[in-house]
Length: 193
Image 1 (cartoon, one colour):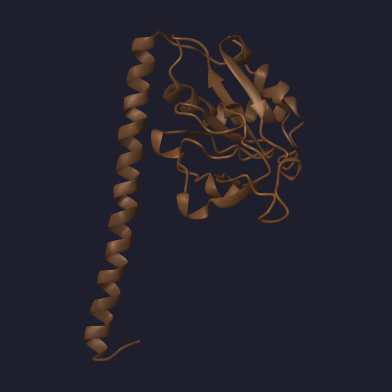
Image 2 (cartoon, one colour):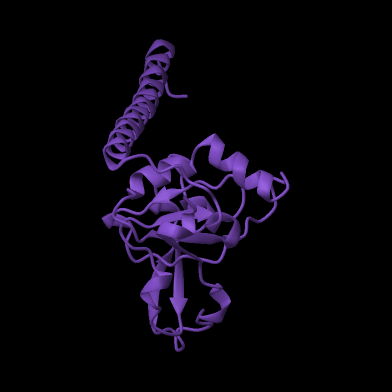
């Protein structure tokens, strides 16, 4: 099934059209996504968000909403599923947002599928295999997405969630182990490094 058959796709805001040049012009300040804030692990890195001073209140369609999928418009696409903690962020024009309109497709499943090698290969082959080339919204819209029954989507989503949590715990464990090793080395040397 084509992505456009069950989802609405749009690119983000061209920032300079609504950006305030001074504090007097600022109607509202928002946090905004950028390329660094889309983590390769499929989450929004809130430490990397930028501030955006707007000359007007922005339309909700330009702000992240729960269960949106935000993707970069070039490889690697780094699809990120928006959670309630990520709502209200400005989506810039280097990114696209996918909003599912169907009850038969889970956002978690679609986000996983868009992160697969198969999806990347298909998008790049349509665009001519140039990894730095911008991917058009229409290319995403025409992408054929395999849609298994809802029960299987739930199982896949659960497996991905558990796997992602396990990876996060491993990264935290590695970080703690590095700290422990550093402390042990300092203890052996008998001073500070």
